Structures are given as C-alpha cells and as structure tokens.
Length: 528
Image 1 (cartoon, rainbow, N blue to C red):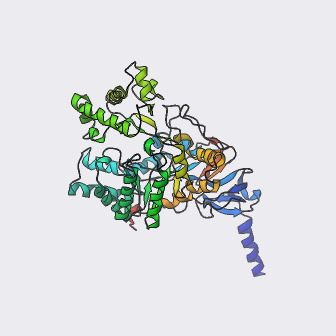
Image 2: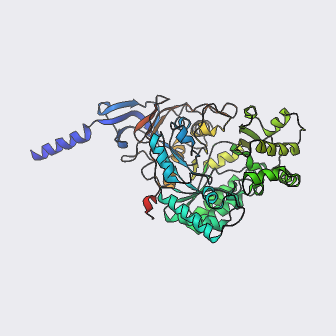
Image 3: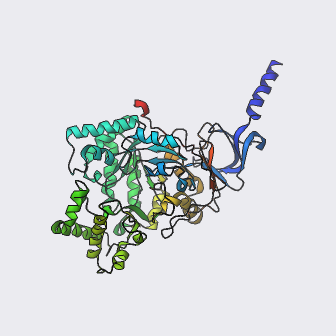
C-alpha cells in the first residue's frame, strides 16, 4: 500500500502539475545542430521544464506552434547598445528578429563603469538579456585620452586595473577596435597584457582587427598572436574581406582560423550577412590625423599643408582598393543636414554642384566632419562580395551577429543589419540559397554563442535551461529592411520568450521587460 501511494504521488507530481506555459505541436530545433523533431515544450519558473508529449491541460497558457519551429532564442554576440538600450528598453528591432540576448561593449567601446551601467538597466528593466565586454578604447581613453604613443608602465598598470575591475563587475571579456582611435595607436604587447588580465577571470578576447582589407591576413595573425600569448579564447568580430582587389580570399582567411584551431588555439568568428559594413565617416581619415582629440584634429583639417597630406593618404587608400571615388560610402545619419541621409559622398558632392572628382570628394569628407565639430557621422560602406559572405557563413565556427544598436524607428538611414540579420540568414541563406541548413543556422545563433561567451544555461533547448525561446515559420521568415528603406521589422517570428516571459506574442511586442544582466565568470572577484 505504501509503495502504491508513493507511485501515485510521483505520478501526480510528474504528470499532473500545471506548467506556466506549454508550447504544442512545434518542430524542435534544439540549438545543438541535431536534426529537428516534433515535441511539446513546457516552461515553469523561467526554465524549460520538460520536452516531449505534454497535454495542453497541463499548461496555464498554451501556444500552438503547429507548422512552426521552436528554437532557443538567438544570442547576438556583437552589438552596441550602450545608451540606446536605456532609451529604448523594448529593443524591438532585436526581438522582432528573434534575439533574446545581446552581447555589447564591442569594437573596443563599452561603458566605462560596468557596475553603474548594469544598475541603470535594472532600474527601469529591459526586454532582452544582456552581457557586456570591457572596451580597450574606453580604457585607453580613460587613462591616456587620445595620446598617440605607447603607455608608460604606470599607465599600463592603470589600464590593467580597470580591466580587472570590469571583469569583477561582470564583464564577459575584453574587446578591441584596432581601426578606431585611440585603439589604433596601441601596439600588440599593450593588448596582450590587458587580455591576460581578462583571461585570469575567464574572459574572451573579441577584436575588430586592425585591417579588414588588403592587410587582413596580418590582422588575423595579430589576433591569433594575442590569444596565444595571453592564453585567452579569441573571437574575431564581423569577419570579412573588405577590399575589392582581394575578393575571394575568404577561402584563405577562413583557413587561417581553422589552422589556428588545429594548432590548439581557441579562435572563432562572427559575421553579419550583408555585403556592406557600417561605421563612422572618420574611418576614411588616416588615424594619425585624429590624434590628441577633436580640437587638434580640426586644426589639422584647417592647415593647408596638413590637409593636403591627409587628402593624399585618403586618395592613396582609394587607389589601393581599386576605387575611383567615394561612391561606396553612403551617409546613414548626418546631424547637420539630414537631407544627406541615404546619399553617397559622390552624390552629395554632385548635389552641391562641385567638381566631379575624388580630390573634391576627399575635401568634402573633411568638411562634413569639420561642420559637425567631429560629432559622429554614421556611414554605410559597400565593400564586400556575396561570394565571400557565403564562404564565411559555411565555416562551422562562424556565429551570426548584427553589429547594431537599438534602432530609433524612422530615424536616419541605418544599415539594415540592425533590423534583419537573423531573418536574412534564415530566409535568404537557408531557405533560398541553401548555404546552410536551418539546424546549423540556429546553432550559429544559439549554442555556439552561448559556448563562446560562457553563458552556461542558455543557447540550447533543454530541461533546466533558461526559457529563452523563439517560434518562427521557416517558410515565411524574412528580413524586410533594405538599404533604401531600412526601418522595417523582420517578419515570420510569431513568439519570442525571454526567461519564460513572452515579449513578442503573435508577432507583437508585449511591452514586458524580463531581461537579465548575464555576468561573466569573474563576477564578484571569483577568478578562475
């Protein structure tokens, strides 16, 4: 009798409980890369509680996912949401694209004080989860401002202390932006020593490398060297070949990463699925001209001799990349005159009735920066080939990332990656071009990023893991954002859950803010 009562108790507990939510009739793509299978998914207290055959009566709420895929929520490993997430905590552009976790602080730029940053987010709440790197450029600016030199021993120690504190405050690693000032002024040993500090606390080294064009191979070698010498995993950001004369060399650059892995070095990459990049207009200007702050830069722009030197280097860069003018450079947002938004430098030059040549366009670039007193002018640069994008995507250790912030809807002409990155992969590269299968695409967006940034209970659809989930129709999922009409949300994602809470329900944002700050391994000073 005792055994019978025990059996009835266990049966009732296991099969008669009421889950917070049950997802019925979906095809589960669990994030591991394994083939999809039919199953129901139960969620309780923000966690995946059970996967299998689950009666609808066991769910307080039931979602019918018939003819749809149920997958782990996507982890975007390369975002820039400092400031924009506080202003727009719903992060609609990410959530409508299936993203449930953001990794920010990339390209060497992050919040200076991560503890304060995290606290500010928690006060008002936010919809997706968030993890952050500590940025090398941010640290260098704090200690050395815009100095174009090596750090003193004291300055190096101060920078290392800032990295250590950030890791204790929860950073998941350190990032560099080595084409941006002041990061471009740093030599390899400086970065190695900072990366060693991040490594002590279980961090990752993520790098926007020194060059993504003609010298991309040298830049890859440096990134691998830093990882090797610092003993830290390496993530090469938005991996690409951004120079027309070397289009097709992605076969070789991917091979370099794989060779490093065969030699025992933990190197992975991420990419956005577009042939255009996006960054500031200042990236066209030689980095030495930007040294010592905005006032010094503007003085150089206004000095005829120095200006001529800057212009000459800009024109040499054009020639090196087999370009006759700056028509590849399109304004995304120009604060002084928004009628320039969406126009290339060449078209703006023509609009102003100026001489139609590269020399005049180079002068225009400097004038645009001067007129805004060096305020950021966001650009879109058309510099890559479709074949290279596909080659990099086929590499199994490539993650998918947007390199975007939280969009301000209908403001400016931003890169479409801020709206449609994941939907574009699923629609264009999985369904239409068949570059990779859907199970592999989901793995690149979920378990691979979770593994890379050590988000231990995310990225896989598995009992006990956080209930970050996305439900989408693989036959209709599509990016709607284009270069000409960028402000358009992705379609095909019916539901998005963050920590078990629906933030997108039947294709509409619910306004809920269940996001959590996800801490790195060094949080609270617990070094590994």
